[in-house]
Image (cartoon, rainbow, N blue to C red; front, side, top):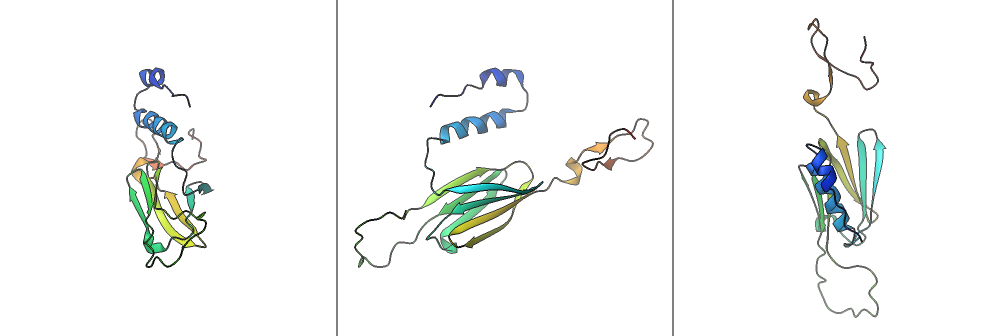
Length: 155
């Protein structure tokens, strides 16, 4: 795999360091482990779901940690209580895992469920009122108001 060089872009942009760091980290991670497999889906304008295939894991063996701009999902399987069984073939992964997901600003975990071997994590983007765009009138005739998504700037 060829290495990506973002140096020319870093020289001509300001404030995008985090984006370029994320792209470089993802390019390096492509050669890593892909266990467990997962899906990411958009369920609405500001709603997302991450679904991980975690067959064989119980809810108390999975740890979900949400930090600022980072979601970490870890699975640690309990050791078998006895060594009575002798496996002739082991095709089902019996190992722990750690998956990291970079989250955009203002994205928070809303819910997590484990059913039928699938761990579903619902995410919601909630932009605070103070961060939403506001219409500014010349001359300050009216107070600032939050702009709705489809509202025209000209009034």
